[in-house]
Image (cartoon, rainbow, N blue to C red; front, side, top):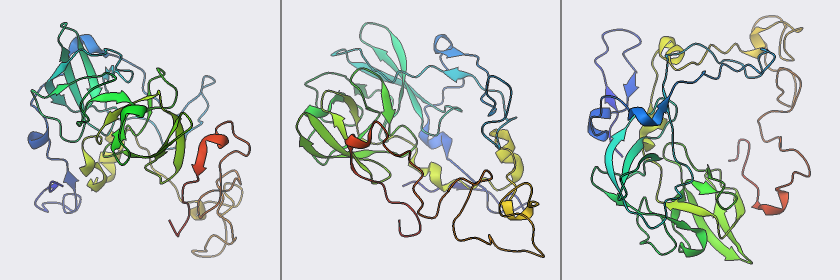
Length: 284
């Protein structure tokens, strides 16, 4: 794993700030491929009534949206990596692929991506990072990312920086996938997945260093429940700096949250596909 870039502590906020060494990791493209970019309205946590449904979101720098190909349905046509680029809308890097027929698409870049590398999607392709095939063709113990839950529906699982899942078993038309959360889930063996891990595993090491950098990312401040009044939060009120004051952790609306409590909806449609639940709470 590469060392994060640090700065001299010229100010209090610079002292602990770290950033990803982009010059070492990216190919130097100054701007995204215009034909694959669009403008879009940023998600500020509001629903169609304009009411806040997700707190602590808003503001942030203006972004262009890069259209990422999560289906990768150009079968048996090799594509060469032209550039490796930063995407402000996701934590992993993206790669611009030029296929043999001349078409270009953006894909999620694997960890070992390099300019000039060739990727291919198909039933019988080499088991090498970046190549994509059906789960039935992938050996047990292989790391995969960009995984479909339904064949042809596009990748849904293991798409963030450094993420991967492990092919752990094969049974009755399903493949058992060990998820990043350690949950083991059954996925149809005809679903597609990419070999390897998502790029930029150093993302988790970033120290923002100051509040302003969070605001650039569109993250607004979070107020502790214990600092509120009783009318505003279950943890509010009390003399001095009181603790939570109750055994079970709750959200602002009194719903169970964290500390080993299960929040998954009972009798969910996908329960039959869960072989082993993810670990939660302090013992995780």
